[in-house]
Amino acid sequence: MASLSYWIGMMGITAFAVTAVLVLAPRGIDLFSAVVLGIITAVGGGTIRDLILDVPVFWSLDLNYLWVAIGASLITFYADALLTRRAIFRLMLYLDGLGAALFAIQTVDKCWRLNFGLPLVPVILGIVTAIGGGLLRDVLAGRPTLFMTRELYATPVLIGCTLYVMLLAWVPNQESIGALACIALIFALRAATIHWNLSVPNWLMTKPRAG
Image (cartoon, rainbow, N blue to C red):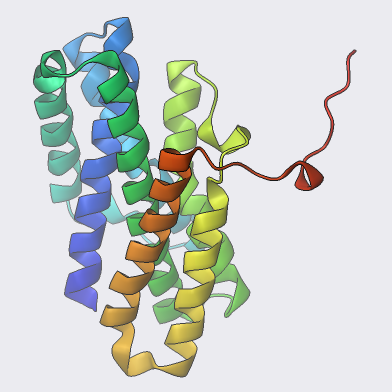
């Protein structure tokens, strides 16, 4: 699972770096800002995770993570002209869902290997890591965060992380298959949310009040 986890992380880095550039592309953004925001978004969630776990931050041990983030940001910056604004927004949402799925499951696996706060903390930290990079991206871009909308954003991650923890406890010898299945589940749920515009039901929402 160690090598699989590495490539899961690399794919997550790529997905989140691309979303960062796509978010600001319609407004007009210079190359340097695109790369900086791409790096922050790509490594933000994982950095928060490693600081909480009190382990060396992953990208400080392997600079390839940073190079991948830079490369993905550059490619997206120059490919932006090929996409319409609507296509950019939809692509950003799907890639954000993919990145969240990848980082969530990678984090659960890392917590499990470190025996960190089992069984609850891996789920919580998986959610934090999955949404952390996107939160930083949206705040720095000055746009409403996906986490604060009515969309089912964190719920698919919660379901996938919980299922993966159960699989690690019950069938530890099938962790690679379990990881891929849970990544697919999270992304499928998130994709369904985007495609059908699913949202949190009213009875789970507070009512906004004036003043």
